[in-house]
Length: 175
Length: 98
Image (cartoon, rainbow over all chains, first blue to last red; front, top):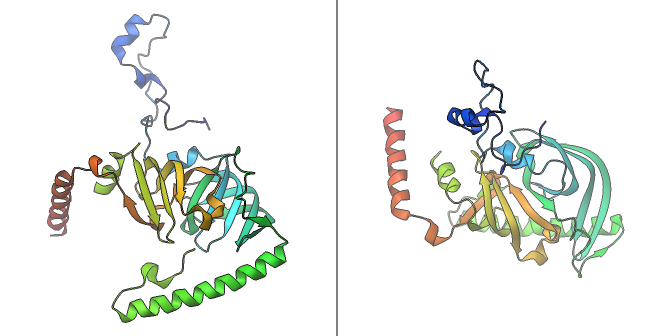
């Protein structure tokens, strides 16, 4: 597929009007040539246009369950279903983090929270307070943190419900 | 469709987006689509210490379904016009339902 960015003007013969063609003698006559499929406008306000810019870039994908995946976006569709290659999962807990190599991911769009393009110049500038640690250590710490958070969220939701508030996102906990 | 068109008029403005998981992100609104998915450029995550995974991110795609608020620049919004448009849209919906 031709790599278009949303800033590109639409290609093809529609770009100029027919009156100009008389002045530009080197152009072949367009008489009888079908216009082909309609060209996309310069600013395509579609999911596809937004994701096209991110294709083949290194991204951090945050899922609804709080997972952070870092990989290269290779394919996608209009629902933001995504394919990531050479993915690693990065766990954060306290001021520790750990990487787990995962491989290829096919993610269903509804689970996507956000997709951020990583600035390759800054990617190695890990915030000073963070330290890399063995997976098991981070995993155990994270489990503890998650349980605590779950408990406090549940308590808060119950209190809110008692006051007549409906829990946001139907009580599902987003990270 | 009204708010899709409305957000299209706000492209290249600085907006702050609060997600349902409380992350707040300020950035330049680059694009929006029919689901109100949002593309932000020059992102700046407020309270970055809590979200270290976003420290090296320069632009992002946010799924519309996880947005709680979009904070807009006051000067760029014609509230009167928006009111009229929403009422007209609501009236259309009613007449369509009949």
